[in-house]
Image 1 (cartoon, rainbow, N blue to C red):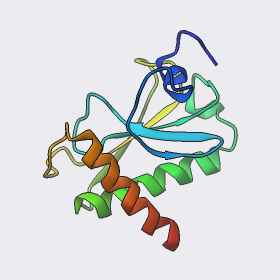
Image 2 (cartoon, rainbow, N blue to C red):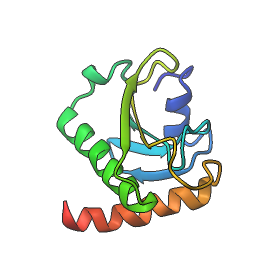
Image 3 (cartoon, helix red, strand yellow):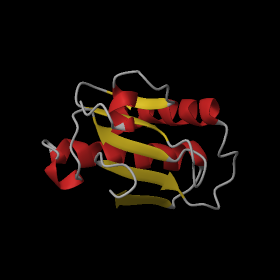
Length: 127
């Protein structure tokens, strides 16, 4: 854990978040400054500055895909975007979010997280 990293603090429960997925290696939670409803950050629990340094990258990218498929189902859109940045928070993260024109309240965090979690359960059964 990097004590200065906001994402590490989220992983360890020091900062609250709206989680949509969590396992022993990864977590996914809603961005608090969403570009659209359901804007999700997919991160490794272990601190890595760059996505390219994350062990088990196949599982990491598979999770980002599952989140995207869940967002498509949850928000009724085919247009889901994924972006990889690293400048703002130096902890590996993949941003996955429906098109900015997607209908819904992007600030309805509890509702949007629940929609993604529910869709993720059905995606898990088919992927």
